[in-house]
Image (cartoon, rainbow, N blue to C red):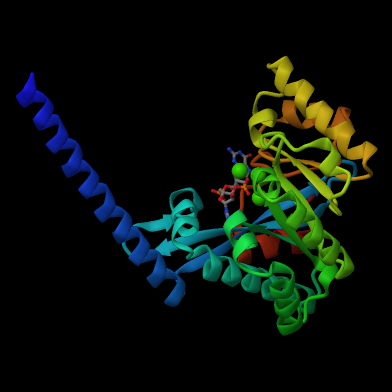
Amino acid sequence: AKTKGGNRFQFYTAEMNQRSLERLDLENGLRRAIDQGELVVYYQPQVNLRNGAIIGAEALVRWQDPEKGLVMPGSFIALAEETGLIVPLGEWVLRTACSQNKAWQDAGLPKIPVAVNLSARQFAAQDVVELAARILHDTGLAPNYLELELTESAVMADAEAFIRATEKLKGLSIALSIDDFGTGFSSLSYLKRFAIDRLKIDQTFVRDITHDPDSASIALAIISLAHSLKLLAIAEGVETEAQLNFLRARNCDEMQGYFFSPALPADEFEAMLRQGRKL
Ligand code: C2E
Ligand code: CA
Ligand code: CA
Ligand code: CA
């Protein structure tokens, strides 16, 4: 048994070394991706549930790796947060999304806000209000066409700092959404003090909305909470007509999800916006 345990220890060590090598490899790759322009921003349309029109776009980063192809953020955002690379990455996404949105407006497309994700680490590491103001100035995008998304858990990590930031953002007319709402246990007393515009109903509730009564109840509670605080409710991850109908019947304001469209490369999103595609 002793030898077995010893072997097992060696096995784990080898595996851990292998994993830290892979991590280091990914970290170096990501550093190169940021420096050499391998990151790309995709845009997912957000739709008004009453008139079916595209009313916004969420910017979602992808990594076009020369060897691996298109890498999804699920496999590098966490590492970017741990290593601090999220700061230059997030700044690049914010700048790219603002300058793209300005280019669409200059080309005469319908004017819509673009929503950019901010990570908790980024929020803590830099003055995001100052950063957003600087990028809006540089790109010439009007502040009311930028929205920032922060996850509920990121917000609750330092709610007082978040309250101060939301007030400054409101002063600049930059909109703010709380992402993945329902998963981070917001204190309702805080919610009242946040100068926010939208609650995004997490996709885990939306997924089960038509067959799990608990998910349906949570989604309904979020919609009525949003409305009683004079906020908009947007449902994420809407994949089926049944989910759409349920949300529409319950007065949810907006949706995004594969049922309408996945996140698209900039040129494809532009074509959709130009056509004026509706739900
Ligand atoms: P998120 O902000 O909650 O974004 C929603 C995710 O759900 C996106 O995944 C989107 O493509 C996906 N999605 C949209 N509609 C549907 C649907 O109908 N069904 C399903 N199953 N999924 C849907 P994506 O693009 O892989 O991004 C994953 C996460 O990575 C994002 O979750 C966000 O937390 C993070 N992320 C993406 N881009 C950035 C960024 O620029 N900065 C930061 N800090 N995080 C980012
Ligand atoms: Ca988001
Ligand atoms: Ca989300
Ligand atoms: Ca999420």
